[in-house]
Structure formats: C-alpha cells, structure tokens
Length: 170
Ligand code: SF4
Ligand code: SF4
Image (cartoon, rainbow, N blue to C red; front, side, top):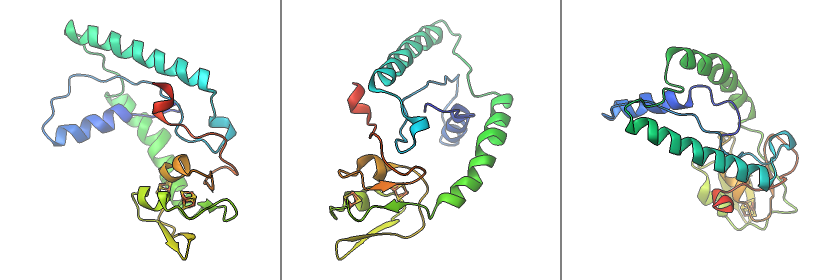
C-alpha cells in the first residue's frame, strides 16, 4: 500500500506461522493506492508505474539477500509490531467503526448492474428493484468503489477520481 502499513509484514508473518510456515524475513514494499476517492491519495499513472518498478527492484534485491542467507527483516520485529498497533490498528479501528455506514450511493449514476453486490465480501450491498442499498456492514475494502463501471460509489471522499487496478501497471 502507498500509506504507512505499520507492521503489515508482521501481521502476515504471524498469520502464516499459525498455518505452519517458517518465517525467515520480510520486506515492506510501497504499492499504488487502491483508494481512489480522495485527492490526497491520488497518484498519477506515471507515479504509480514508478512505484511498481521500485517495488520490482526491491524484490530482486531481497531475493539476492535470501540467496546469501541474509533475508531482510523489515516489519517483523517488536518495534514494528508496536508501531503498527499504536499508529494504525488502534487508530483505524475506530475510524472503521465510524465509517462503516458511510458508503455513498449516487442513484443518478447507478445503473443497477449488480457488480458491486457480487464483489462485496461483507454482503453489505443489495439490489431491490434495481435500487442499490447499503446495509451498514461495510469494512472499507474499496472493492465496489474501484470496480463500479459508473463510479457511482464513494466512501471517504465525494467523488471517485480514478479507479486503480494492478492490470493498468503490468
Ligand atoms: S457496480 Fe455501480 S452501477 Fe453497478 S449496481 Fe453497483 S453501484 Fe450501481
Ligand atoms: S467497500 Fe467493500 S465492504 Fe464496503 S460495501 Fe464496498 S465491497 Fe462491501
């Protein structure tokens, strides 16, 4: 992600351990924004392409380090765990609660295609007689917002500026 991800690597490492993985290291890589309805989070296509190529380089270097038995250790130490907890999880926990009923549907733009209904992992969206309804169980994953063909959905911002998908950068 393009924002501070706290100990994203550590969270994943702890989850993988539960399933028997042996964790030898970790890296943090900056990726393009997936949230597109706030100006502050918007990067141009060119800037995002640069991010992807930097990520590519970082991964190549990490592979070399692993081959030399010195895997990078980013994001998996106790310090990162604390930073993630204090700087991200505790802060965003309440934000998520607050915004969970804030999905905005522009009924003028919505064509009732149902794409967002199928995509929502929370079953938060429902079409009733071609009218889209949000049931206040949204966890801000942004899938529906990034995939709506009419850019009819927003959450934190007032409008969708651009929809970011990885295939744009490949
Ligand atoms: S994907 Fe967009 S256009 Fe389609 S039903 Fe959902 S909000 Fe409406
Ligand atoms: S942002 Fe995610 S959780 Fe919220 S309504 Fe859209 S798809 Fe569902």
